Amino acid sequence: MCYSHIRAPRLRRGNGRERTDGNTVRFVADAMRGRLAKWLRALGYDTLYWRGDDAGLVRLALAERRLLLTRDTRLPPRLPPGQTLFIESDHYDEQLRQVIDRLGWPTRTGHRCLRC
Image (tube, rainbow, N blue to C red; front, side, top):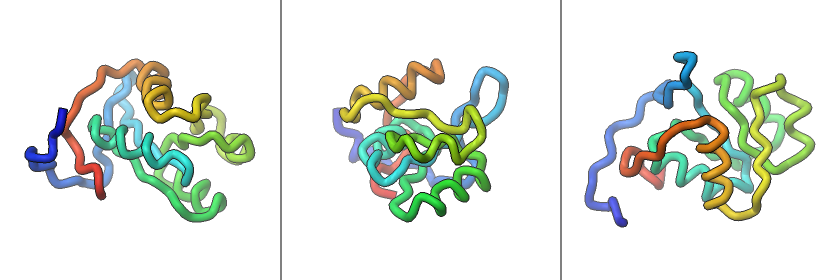
């Protein structure tokens, strides 16, 4: 279903989805997880797509307390336990299901712009 006719709300820093413990979860996806980042945004999750170097990605994840989504086995050891979700599949639809299942959230559509 296409939602291109629906105007996305203005984005604000810090918007995210609430976990069951009341804390907001925000994501940062590495350079190889672009489609996953796009679809997480479409479902209403605060997700950044990082296309820079690994050191900058780690700094961003730490500074903004974002959950890093990656398939790079070298990145998880550089972050505190629980701040990385290692993505198992190469297919974005399976990656999306893994993230949503892992966090136990229902899916919602049409909440964020897919381009920005």
